[in-house]
Length: 332
Ligand code: CP
Ligand code: NVA
Image (cartoon, rainbow, N blue to C red; front, side):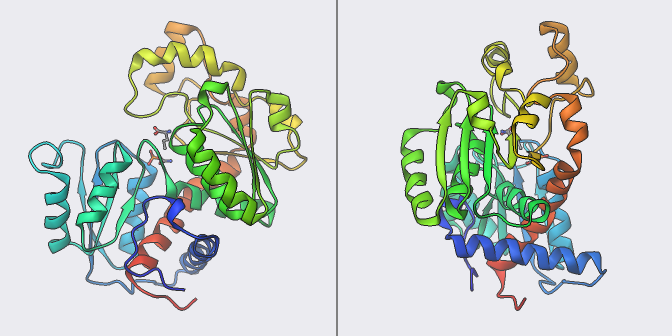
């Protein structure tokens, strides 16, 4: 298996075999790290990390993973570069390719990271766009395998805004890897029809399936994994909160939802999460709308946090695998 020189922009571009290889490589790096064994075989290389949106997990994962591989990083924050403002994406890609061995991009439209990749001579990695969050899905699948023993054949129910980066990417990942994907949401939050029909083809090949339903009981019945995300994503306007709270409150992950899922079901959340009043936004929403928890209750979050924090840790191992595999061939 070689992925050397490839970009990592969306899981659409990767086969089942390639995705599973990245998860295996991540597991290899995780074991090495736990044993304290070095994997710094990319010593002397440099990567640029462009963040036009904020981040905790993705940034820390790219930085730590790069350092563990022996690489140096430059972090470009939302205000600290000329990108898109004083210099085109294409020119930026050409400049950074002369200096760096790889480029990570987190930001807005998928077309931006695609333009970067088209114009760069080095691998470009998508650290989240409005449409996709592919590194997150690798971590989610790795966590499913660790907690449930396997990936293929499992049923994952995604509750909430299923037409944004997380819903889209989970549907792609599930359909490639043979899971049964269920989007549980009001109809207007279903993923776009074009993407659904693309995914249905992959699901047919992999033995997976896709169900879009607004019925919470039907959608979460016997699911092995219940998954959700924030109701308002980065870059969306504050005015949208009221509509989202009204539309998505029936799709909150509650203990009733978890009881309706399969015995031994796990809960996943890419984080950050609004499950209590520990955030500025959470407190503002409580003051304005009188609710203290949003996409998931605090009770569910606390009861199922082991899988959620394993998922967060696995961001680092899987991001390491993506950078490592696209920069060098590995014997594992
Ligand atoms: N899950 C995730 O991407 O987290 P950050 O926004 O903190 O990077
Ligand atoms: N949908 C969320 C994911 C955060 C990791 C967002 O885009 O803000």
